[in-house]
Length: 378
Ligand SMILES: Cc1ncc(COP(=O)(O)O)c(C=O)c1O
Image (cartoon, rainbow, N blue to C red):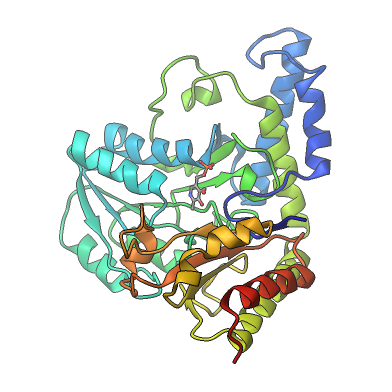
């Protein structure tokens, strides 16, 4: 039996989504750029999906671009802002996903963009005072890129406050919303954001499809050149089945958001309480209050031989979760996020992340394995 507690990495594809996609993998195979009926059918499906996605975040359909992934969407924003929108400076944080962090480094190293990092505290909260100071210190055209929620530790940004600060200083604001889109309501008429992104496989949709929301006034251009698909924003024949699957999954997620959230949060809290009442010296990485994703619990285990082998022994027991420590004790590549928190590098950090399909019984299975591993009760 598999216990799947790695839903921040990816989620299982829903049957309803598979059914919605199937016709576009079989009989509706026309290229959406063609003018005959086979192509018009797939074009119509794409535009319907675009309307669905736009409505979910209160955007205009023309503000949605479909991409191959959130990685591509984030690359489009960051490189596009520098190459085409006159951005000379990027302010970001040290705890961004690599698809933002490494792209910012690319802009610094190859496009000569000035880069500044906002300080984060020991729970990974971006220091918004520091953001204001950095923005006030230069007149250069600036893009701020701060993720809405951290995928490793679950810490959430006050996106509204961050966006308002950016507005105050005339900076463009990009937020990587991969872990929050389809998990939290997002209304771009209310939120002062210029760019947000999403990835279908994080909310029970297919892999290999994502989207970029770009506010009408904040245009950047594509770094992928070719045909005129996606109004010139993203060349390449569209992944029609993926697009249809993403819109179906997103709509379903938003239709059931509150009930799913309550269930997932109860599983997370049950796990948290079980850990604290059963094992010695348990700590958590990231916020533990409501400024945290209800889907993510990053547990910090005390340093020991048992902890070092924990991920391995959980895997042997059929339990899927993700590692990520601060790269202490000569471990291979550590997590840049855990490192940025400045925590004890010898502790072992494991991310458990949940979906609506997880249950308390699964938590009990994981707890049994952890108890067996540590064999030390309070
Ligand atoms: C916060 C965050 N940003 C970006 C990505 C990349 O998404 P994709 O798999 O669509 O490239 C991920 C996926 O792990 C993520 O968690």
